[in-house]
Image 1 (cartoon, rainbow, N blue to C red):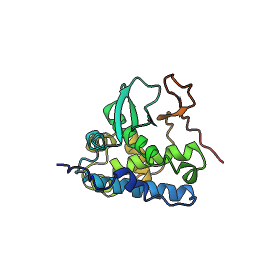
Image 2: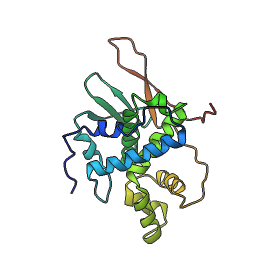
Image 3: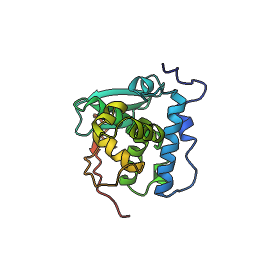
Length: 210
């Protein structure tokens, strides 16, 4: 059974404290994302079946809602708390992954310009954080080597989509890299006239060479 999240120090602040003050390259940003994911698992005392929505819904700085969205999710600060909106039409496995993806954007809010040179990098780092949190490298390798190598069974075991499993298997070197076409996962806030509903734009992940 999961234990209550520690209240003496904000989990968000604890994760942000791992971020270096200076500019870093993308490889270091990915390493940071994995460190933060591992630390989140430790802070939440996540059991063998990983992090679930209720683990994060109890955090004082976060509100999770479901809406009919054009993308899988979005996150924004409403002046009082962070909001993560998930696409109500997505599968629960995809919503779970998107929840962790958006949490990474929240963690990076004040430091994104130092960590990434493009939106592509920020989005990929958020995906990497979610994958590391939901499919820790050691656990994935253990199950892959001793239980099953079928992506559908691995997806059920870790509570994620088969696409997420395939990508994570590549990241951990358990299978050869392949090229996957991924639709935009989230949206970012755009300038909105006061008094009107906040507007958002989908993030298209065409790789930047900048």
